[in-house]
Length: 149
Image (cartoon, rainbow, N blue to C red; front, side, top):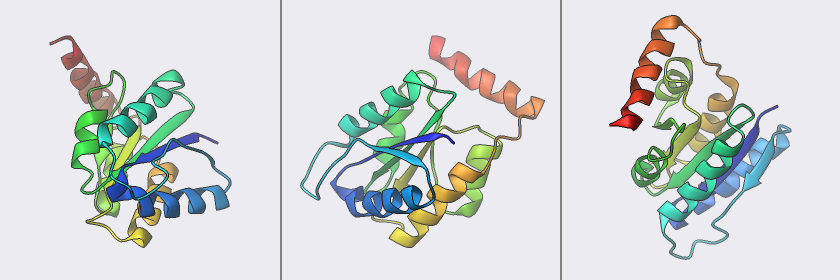
């Protein structure tokens, strides 16, 4: 089973706590890098912690990042080589992020999704495999080549 590395800022703290509890109840190994309260913090710090852990073991780990909207976390996460972070709001975007884009970091907004939806999307993200189709691999390869620009 894949290791899940999860982080949030103050805007995603309560959702992170709910997601961690649910994923652990399903037997997932969850590494919670914080934040540990609803006190104001800077989202890039937690994006960095999660992405570095996913980079260290890309074949056996994925990340989940939650801030107020998910936008800041997704922007920060996508600065890291090998990270394909997807901002998802519903089941369709979550499935497509995995099936077509082979996303390895799920980003969500604590102020735009209910805790129940965040928990549901986190589980769906983990259970949805990448299709592996050639057309998707080709497109991901093109995106990865942008790192040299």
